[in-house]
Amino acid sequence: MSAAAGAVIDARSGQAARREHILDAAESCFVRNGFHRTTMQDLAREASMSPGNIYRYFDSKEAVVLGLAERDRERGAVLVEAMERAGDKRAVLMGVLARFFLEISREAAVLRLDLWVEATRNPAIADLVERGDEEGRVWLTEMFDALKTSPDCDPAALFDAIAPLMKGMIVSRALSPGYDARPAVAQLQSLIKAGLSGALALPPADKEAGR
Image (tube, rainbow, N blue to C red):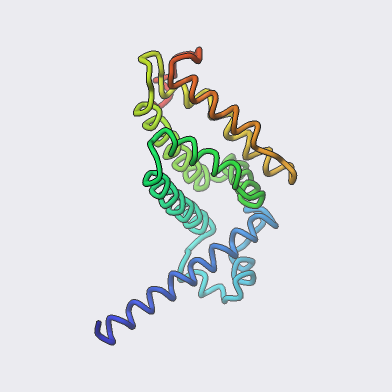
């Protein structure tokens, strides 16, 4: 490798590290002060950087949230890939869901709840939240379709049935420091197993609602 190529790689690694540092600082600020009250100057102070440096990486708070969402997706993809190598798709699905809801930190849950609230008044955040929700819905319904063992399983309807429980676990984690998600995770897994086998009575999904 040439010295010039090595310098480019080092520069890119440094930029990636600074970007991660900013995202970590933003997560702390958002959890502590809420998204709405946090300013870019707050992010700069938390990251021990100048506001100008922050703007080199993110041009708005919404861009920071997008960066956090992209980081979460990348981490999720790595987790899924690792679990797929270790077991079948059903085990992957149940394992990913269990791990996510059992291991989500209270800080991450508080941030998710705050963004849901902010989405009711900020169109940019609403769009980010909607896109993230849609990605999760598509992934799960595709998994349900691949894993169903009965023609009576409606993957979209099964998702609609479990979505409130999944959001409820995040809300409970955010509001209760000592929240134990294990009973709810067990309930979630039981509902999915029943749904995949066609044993769960479900109303048909509303295909007029953008599905």
